[in-house]
Length: 175
Image (cartoon, rainbow, N blue to C red; front, side):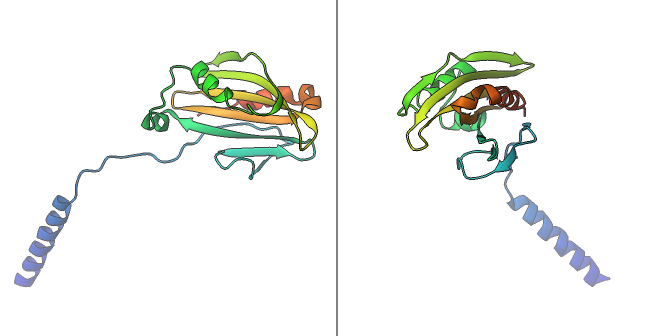
């Protein structure tokens, strides 16, 4: 009986010492999830942009795209606080394809759905390698927690055929 009492006492003393030796922990969440819808003719892929969270394509229809997100918390850690979606858009678009030939950028259109802000513009440029004009729908999404860059593209001659689908992809983003 004495051995059992000694064993229990030893276990209690050690477990109390172990608990007391630990410091307080602050919880953090890692990773970020969001929802997006793609047309059935597109599938997920990889290889366009190493910073993207999701990439999509249809090689048959020759259309492509990807999404990059930046959480507001991560941006604040590197002293990048944007006052609005407009400011985030302007910061991005000023450098997007800026050195490409015949680059044109349309006036951005903005829209709000619930508590999510959206901004979109059309960008075209001449690709010397492919020897064709490329069309991008550039979309920016602002939620409570993040900014998203949604970039979808095709040959400029197919803009009218795919722009509505590109917009549906953009406006489906939510977290």
